[in-house]
Amino acid sequence: DIQMTQSPSSLSASVGDRVTITCRASQSVFSYLNWYQQKPGKAPMLLIYATSSLQNGVPSRFSGSGSGTDFSLTISSLLPEDFATYYCQQNYRTPWTFGQGTKVEIK
Amino acid sequence: QLQLQESGPGLVKPSETLSLTCTVSGGTISSSNYYWAWIRQPPGKGLEWIGSIYYSGSTYYNPSLKSRVTISEDTSKNQFSLKLTSVTAADTAVYYCARGVPAGLNNWFDPWGQGTLVTVSS
View 1: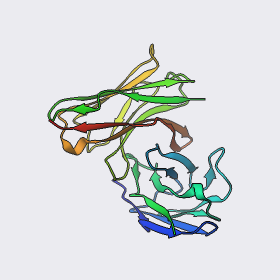
View 2: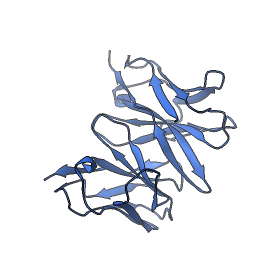
View 3: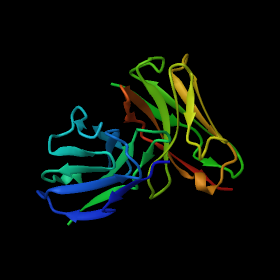
View 4: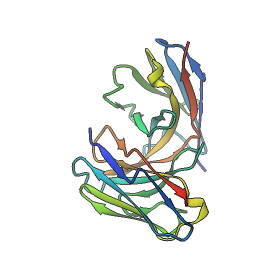
């Protein structure tokens, strides 16, 4: 299985901060990498697919980049509604696997 | 707008079979443009893909669960289902159903159902 490792596991940030979450794959997944946002008690929601494509309706403050084994999700200016847990997911090879999540908390 | 809703028992005894159904509304599961998936999340933990079913009826399962999992569909009811046999406490989780969106070699899960908590306990 392809292991996905996110860092950090959690972070504290303030409204307006720029935040970057990284995701590393145990082998190359080329550009087959998605990002999801999950709020407490809710289902995950697709944010970004294919490394850098924004899902319809997702604000432009979210962006994704990377290739191969190293990827990142950036929130350019945190808003209160962005405090959540974020997961990366590779779709290069089954079993599809997720990172362990990065919880973004209010400082 | 496509919506998915999981249903099934919230409590299952150890060694028994977990059975869940996902009802899809606002779209048809018979579309060749999508596939359908089950994903689970143990309390306080991360996400695990369980398996998927495709338009052709083909299924793909996570090898870690493959011996115990069956995913099937009922197109007449616009539903797909999950059966997980011989459950243990380790199978306690929120179970989500989701639509898989293939686009070339890429694919992703969108949208997801709200999830249903299944507890394995005697």
